[in-house]
Image 1 (cartoon, helix red, strand yellow):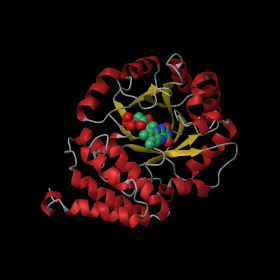
Image 2: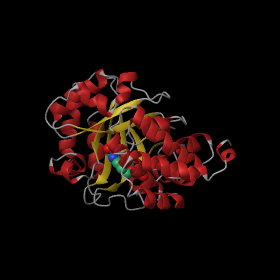
Image 3: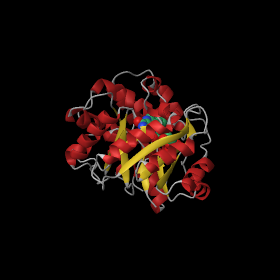
Image 4: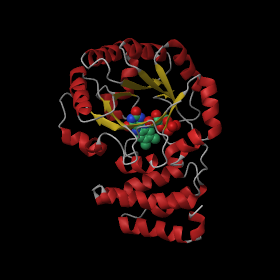
Length: 321
Ligand SMILES: Cc1cc2nc3c(=O)[nH]c(=O)nc-3n(C[C@H](O)[C@H](O)[C@H](O)COP(=O)(O)O)c2cc1C
């Protein structure tokens, strides 16, 4: 039974990983993708996106980090995988699910799901040129427009010698439309002998149980659920109680302080906070209200003051349970 924290570009950054990993029970966190075109990137690019690499490749609370690479050039992916590993990344993950148009025009991310042979060639090249014990994973969606090639893609990853496959149970065309197709993940799990990690729509204890039942997997990756409830993985692994809204408000303040402390450019902090609050709206009524209050605020101080003000309406003892 393992829990991986999902990569979420523009959201699950160094500071949010620190907040989420406080609650423990995360076996591995995959970084936001590092985009690879055709050149080896300097270490500074990796450090900017994955600052944990300067601290043994773990968060402040000890969660190991794995760099995710996004691209299609086998040589460049290999060179950058070597850099990430030399810098302390706990294995390397390769992205075959990103739906972004710019990425797909350059034939990376989900676009490659149309070409399982190409995925095999890329991954086989990488696997054959790294030490045999390097832990390598790929993250796929079920397909681009439809699921007809999902098993071929999964087999390509397995035959290339990768040890783990994360499957987000949707095609690129489906975007994030619910529900995730856990049955399709189950079919992939039956078709390959490597570890298959189920991903998509695990937001509650009940969904977690059903996902394990339907997919036959024992391992899951959690994305948005850990944004709705930052201790969701501890809830699933250890029976922790859900966080109350006021505790989440406090985390929103901690997040801003951490980003500030970590040297994240101040002008971008309100955007990141709003991105989190917007997603909170999917799980908490108060999130929708808070987002509509915050969405026009541009500077960090106004965002912070608004959240502090909202938090001050809760009695202090409600934070001390
Ligand atoms: C804002 C956002 C950014 C994402 N960025 C990435 C990414 O960088 N790499 C990746 O492989 N998947 C990315 N994903 C997909 C998630 O890792 C995950 O597969 C998806 O959200 C489904 O899991 P969930 O239902 O637990 O959120 C992103 C998802 C969201 C919502």
